[in-house]
Image (cartoon, helix red, strand yellow):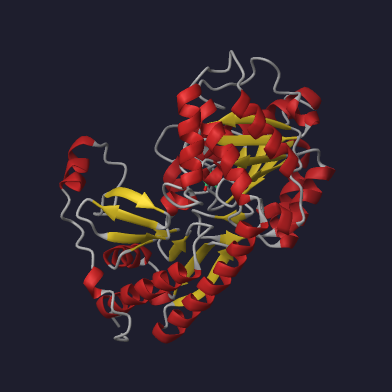
Length: 424
Ligand SMILES: *Cc1c(COP(=O)(O)O)cnc(C)c1O
């Protein structure tokens, strides 16, 4: 370990917080949070209540795309908070309409439905696709094609459509009419459509799987799916909950893939931490979501929409999108360098500032151990499955902050390689 990486004077001491102990006593046990409990944030940094500072390459799971306590977002929220919080959907509101207009102007879409989470945006997309197929075609045209390792949310429908059995099993019978195929396997898609195409209602996929391992779709795979959807009158739903809002260096990743969906879902970074999601589609599809067919009490609430409107103004600019490309290059180069010297990763994959570092075979189950060590070295990271360390720093992160993150990562990696000596 090189001596010039002296971050020792700033070595966090996690585990001191009584808050983490309280968690285990008062919260349902479905989460296992790290020992550090953040007390405040600023930009790419978080502080715990002992004053330890952490560089945040997790971003609340690819949400805090403009960093913590972004002054422009704080102002947008505070201004709206003084005016109007909530009206429900028995009334419309100005921030929601302005946000809808901005999303439409920036994408293929003509119409928007607002909800509060990625799951709800996908739930709406899937219900809408089923409704379209019933209205236009036949009662039995309800098959949804999804992919192994996909993640689309935690409601019962979306978790059933997701491709990870460990999340969807153990809750009784799943909703019927859902198939899963291997991701990036065009031949399997062609064969499925030959057999089931007449009953196909929609295909849903992430253009880069996030939770499932940070695996980008190939252009050929997406083209094949788009083609099949045309031929068999099925809708293409792109779940850009994680890849959207600038994460890829484009506002939405499908722009880079050159494919246009029928329905697009977006959430996570849309509110940069204020809960909001949107389901976007064309006029022809939208008309099937007639009055009363779907709804949400909080969806499109003025506070969330005021924040998201400002988020789009900031993110959908060359300044931010170019920074994503440049910082991505810098981060990948630094990770490659660490990997070479410590023989750690088989590849660094992903899009823009959503990166997956795939651990070599001997560490294939140890991503969480590495994440914990990163945390101890003052760097917050994520995992995507047992063998992939996932990074999602803010899109406006600086060159020196990326360099600092890499230094902290190297410190963690050195400890990791030492503590995780292969058993053979
Ligand atoms: C996070 C995520 C979801 C679920 O979003 P929630 O806000 O947790 O409901 C759905 N799809 C993808 C691709 C995601 O990354």
